[in-house]
Structure formats: C-alpha cells, structure tokens
Amino acid sequence: MKGFIRAIFATIILAGMMIIPASAAEDQAVNWGDERYQIMVPGFIETRDMIINDQNTTVIVIQKPEESSKYRYQFFDVVTTDANASYIISFVYNMKQEVVGDYVTDLENGRTSFIPYLYEDFDELSKEPIYCKISFTGIGDKAIYDFPIWVVFEDKK
Picture 1 (cartoon, one colour):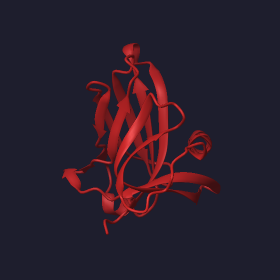
Picture 2 (picture 1 turned 30 degrees about the horizontal axis):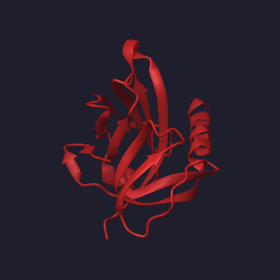
Picture 3 (picture 1 turned 180 degrees about the vertical axis):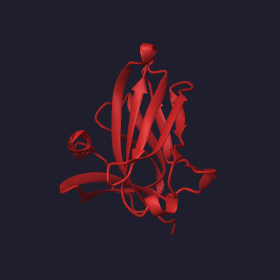
Picture 4 (picture 1 turned 30 degrees about the vertical axis):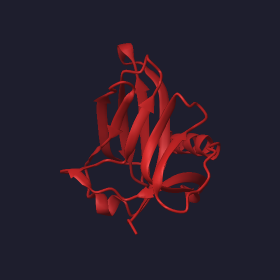
C-alpha cells in the first residue's frame, strides 16, 4: 500500500512537469517545480504519459546507458543548489514495487552522478518502466527533499 501511495504521489508531481518533448536525444534538465533540485539527463528523448499501476503517469524517456561497471549504469546526474543537502539516498524499484537497486553517495558541490547498484540484470529491468526514489539528505540524516521519478529506457538509434 505504501508503494502504491508513493506511485500516486510521483504521478501527481510528474504531471506538473513542464518539459517540451525532444525529437532526438539530448541533455535535458528535469525538475518538479523546485529548480533547486533537479536531474541532468544525458540522452533525454522525451516525456511520455503511460498507464502504470492503473494510473496515468508521466515518465521520462532516456537512451539506455552502457554499463559503467559491474551492475552499475549511469542514469543521469543529480543536482542541487541547496547548501543543506550533503548526500543522496536512493532506491530503484521495478513495476512490482520491489527494490531492485540502491545508491547512497555524497554530493560534490551539489552534484553527483546517479549510478545505482542493481540487484538484477539491467537488460531485463529496462524492458519496463523503472521507479527511482531519490532523497536529498542533510545533517542528522534528515531528508530535505524527495525526488521520485519513473524512467523508461530506449535503445540508442
């Protein structure tokens, strides 16, 4: 139930995104109305509405990345101008709302690459939308801002 509520919350937030679809892959900044927290997406293709868990959901579509190292793929860069945010805690979920990856790392000058460790084969996972929950965290391990996102990967053309 908790995962379902998160999915609905993410849908509402993503529906508010104002991004013009791109005709070809390019770098694109994505935020949810608060420009202090965003991701920079290399290989951004477009945003797309999809039905996920019986809900109309906006997803970002990006080029499928190459493997960075064993079980790790760089999805995008996480960026903030909030000086209180010192690191991110994140989890990656499949369509069944099972955790299939995680990533915890410090922010360097408000930025880091999002390269989660995946517990399952990326080629199989990337056949369906993947849900990423990224929490910007500060002193005392307090979550400052949650950044939920659905991602769809497409092969490079």
